[in-house]
Structure formats: C-alpha cells, structure tokens
Amino acid sequence: MGSVVEVTSTNFSTAVLQASYEQPVVVDFAATWCGPCQMLKPLLEKLVTEYDFILAKVDIDHSPDLARQYGVEGVPDVRVVQQGEVQPGFVGALAEPQLRAFLREQLQLESALDRGLREAQAAIDSGDRAAAKRRFDRLFDEFPQQAVVALAAAKFLIQIGQAADAQPLLAAIDPGDRESYARAQALQGLVELHAAAQLAPSSDLDRQFAAAAQLALAEDYAGALQGLLEIVETSRKYRDDGARKAMLALFGWLGNENALTKQYQRQLMLALY
Image 1 (cartoon, one colour):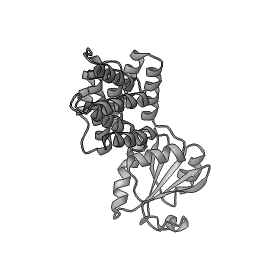
Image 2: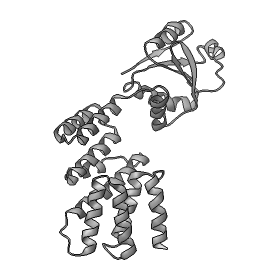
Image 3: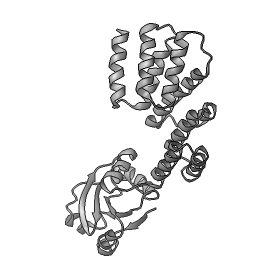
Image 4: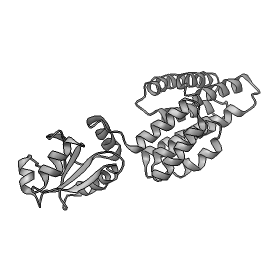
C-alpha cells in the first residue's frame, strides 16, 4: 500500500525527490477547475491503496512555480519520479485499466489485488482447490467491489464443477461496467457449456458438443473452437444453433484481439456464408 501527500515548492524536494529513492513517486499536476483532473483524482487515490507508490498531488494554482519549473502546459499532467529523476508519464485522464497498465509497465509495480489473483491462479494450477478458495475468500474481503475478483472466482467455480455457484457472482456484476459485464456474459456461456458437458449424449453431435465443452472448461480453447466449428458445419439446427452461440461466448471470453478469436471468427464466417 502506498501513501498520498500534498506537495508544494516548500516540500517538493523532500516529499518527492528524496522520497523517490525509497519508493516510486507519481506526481499529479492538477487544478480544481479541471474536469479531467477530477475524474483522474479518485482513480489515483484508489490505486495508491493497492500499489506501493507515493501519490504526490500538486495544485498548479497554488504552486505555479512548480508547474513552470517542470513545463506543465496542460492538466492533468502526471510525472514519474524515481531515484531523484522526474520523467514523463502521461497527460490527460486515463481509465482505470490503462492506469493499472501504466503502473505495471512503467513502474513495474504489482498491486495487492494482482498479487492475490496470481496466488489464487497458482493454487488452481497446482490443483490445490482449498488454497484457491481461501485466497478468493480473502480477496472478496479485501476488494469487495472489484469485478475482476468475481470473474476469476466464477471461472474457478465453473472449472471445478460448481457452475451454479458461479451464477450469483456473474449476476452481481454491474452492466455499467461494460468490459466486466461483457466478460460476465461470456462466462455465462461457459456455465451453459458446463451444463452441456454433463448431459448424457444420445447422438454423435451430443458427444462432440460435450467434448468441446470439456475442452473449453480445460482452457483448450483451440480444441473447443475447432470442435464447435465442425458442429456448425454439420448442423445449424443442432441445439438451436448452439454450437455457433457457444463459439460467440468463447470469443467474448477470449477478447476480440485474441489470435484464436480472429482465426475462428474468419472460419465461422466462411462456414456460415
């Protein structure tokens, strides 16, 4: 966890330059009349509770000398200070995912949330379900409003065969959080695949669909998509076009920029038209 300090020319040397030898410092040059500044401020204040850095807030109207000294021409203007050196950061307001990427990539910082998710995933990968559940329980206590925790926990529950328990987590995700809501909808598709994987097959297509569902739950997405594509090519009527819908759910989970998504979107289009 980091800390927040109000900075003027009086304490800039000690609170920012000297402190940067111990911790990275993010300097937020801002103004009370600046709309984007007021959007960025709560996000930075939120992230400093997760990441180990100092947030130094400079009001340019109260400290115009600092703004002139560091060439601040527009606000918000965020700088990074490490080992006493003031470096460019970014100008303008960023969304939370971009801010997290900035802290991770430019400052090489890992948040308590990221670390907890990594530890939960390590427990899952090692087959220690009990340890993974304990880690998720702590994450829910520490970060009760973080959709990423609900998504990771729901995915874990689906993988261990408790898809019904995942549904309340997915249903609680705010539709206003478009990115998280889209991933929740995609995970709902995995819930439906899990249900399909449990059905007793009565035809070759049933067996093929169940096999593809099992591959998806095992994160063999290439195998799952290939199996589903073959069903689409065989019968659009099967499960009311269920194979195509399952492919769309996997595209939503993987994301539009994923190489598998791009590959199988093209192949699905060829199969359909």
